[in-house]
Structures are given as structure tokens and as C-alpha cells.
Image (cartoon, rainbow, N blue to C red):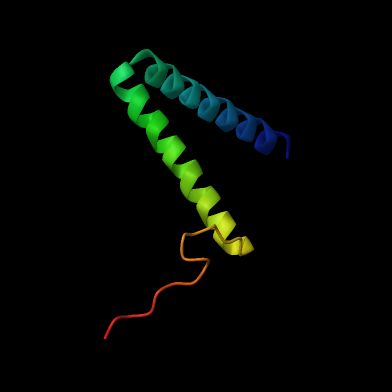
Length: 72
């Protein structure tokens, strides 16, 4: 059991070291940093929109909340 825990700790340390290397590379390179920030921001916006839709909160529209029907 102790060996399993030590192996898991080694794997955790390895993954954390990889993540710190990746983050330091992203921050050091501006050509990578800006798209990563935009992707994170876009993901947050999409998450919030999905959350608002699940909660059923409606926005204010100029049509008074009614959608126009299809024109025939």
C-alpha cells in the first residue's frame, strides 16, 4: 500500500512539473499567450451563456420578449 501511495505521489509530482513547464512556456511566448487567453475567455463566456440558458433567465429584447413568427 505504501508503494502505491509513493508511486501516485511520483506521478502527481511529474504531472505538476509538466503543467508548470507548459504554463511557463505559454507565458514566455506572446504568440501563444494571446490565443490561449482568448480561448480561455471564450470558454468562460460560453459556459456562462449555457448556465444562464439552463437557469431559464431571459434577456430583454426590443420585441418585448416575443419572437416574430415566420412570414408566409
